[in-house]
Length: 347
Image (cartoon, rainbow, N blue to C red; front, side, top):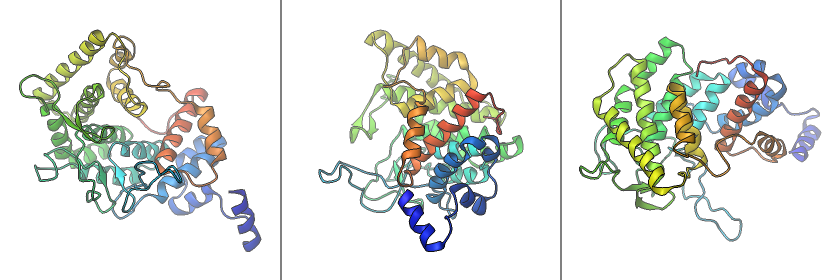
């Protein structure tokens, strides 16, 4: 990065604009820049990586996804263009909202909600989403697989976003996406194996084929909880079959813990969102699940901010949009926590 800066300085006779200057020129002053001036440069660098991946026409935020490692360079790009991964998209909304860019986040939320199928089709049942989508909104060929649990992450992202909005804007967003939220929650509530109450096999990205994992019980509960909170914002009665299914899932989560005799090991991504969704409405529940049920993730769920900061400042090239979104959230939340700063939003 330093070499590029020196080259541009030699060509232009002056230093190129900073990331903050570019963000301000394009989008105006971002509220977080005033709130956290000491880390504004780092936040803007990561925010710019997200905004550069943002399609202002559709609201999509995409990145190049890598598949099996290549012996030559260790990474092999998936054929085709950049895509949005349904399980990751909530991070983009959260990063934008944390920075105060709610209008862009709302458009991105609209793209996310539009990916929820409104009826059964050859590509997936009502309420499902494509695991990967291009910015035009179509499924990324040849990856037509639908990921049932991904609907839970989409619901978590939508719930996260509306919590940052003023009541009028929040209710307008929820009414716009009400049918999509209902379809996704219905899918999670009804995806069972006969009358057993167990989750039916579904595509698992980590496996590359259908299966059932312990994590899916947490994911399905999280999605239903996010949908429940959205309906309560609107003052609507929550469907009984959602609540009944949540109770069934919770019972099985507890039974797994007792039967296994060891904590359920969740991915860091699931651990982060599961805790966020449960804490928004019931801190005791999140605490119970973290302690009594023994929910853990490799390395824990917390931020290793010193490592993130070192990596961010040493990054020679613009970061991957997903990595940039996680860094943005980590820096902002850590700064607010340690400095007891007032938030600019209402999560």
